[in-house]
Image (tube, rainbow, N blue to C red; front, side, top):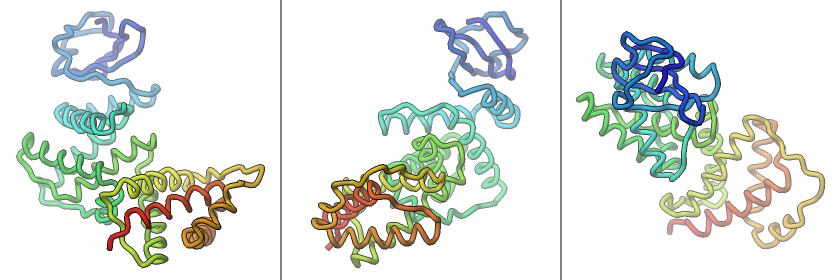
Length: 282
């Protein structure tokens, strides 16, 4: 492999056989090296593909501030998520997660703990992601001999949700979680019920709300040109769920100035009906 650009002693940019630009990392991989020189493939322990020049700049800064072992830890956590969801994630998440873990572990060693105000919601809305977060805490304990609180498992879960939604803004993920909480509360109060969070219909309901909430926060309104023929069917067949969705519609209009269009009303009504009647706890 030929070095195209040196980022740090531990990371260089190369072109693979398909001329795709990659970052490869390894302890001291670029020591006494220059662009154009070869590197030993056996010394590579991490490979990343990033989006655009701006990400390379962020990555370079990260490597200057954060030890390589945190990058390796983050990569291991994201690989767990890839296996769990059977999908690839952008490697860009390694940057934000590594930075977060470095600060969190350093803060904990110094006796500082930050509570996660959304922890209860994260446990209920992002059950799989939170489980990965808990497994990550075990990794951290083995590698650094320090026990982070469960609040951090929640923060790690949000980083995974962030990459699932193809987002680059953690503030959006906090807001998405808040919108899910608000809509779920309206449904529970309307039907005077609690949900079985282990049920597949609940998982689908929350997944639907995740993407809907992100669209709402970005103000990506539906552009409807004609009436949805299913609306009358849904109103008649799932009248109680439809009434609940009208409450949600009015709430979103009042708080977020977002107009819930007919297609969204139809899909949300069906999800509400299923989550209430298929996951209702007796």
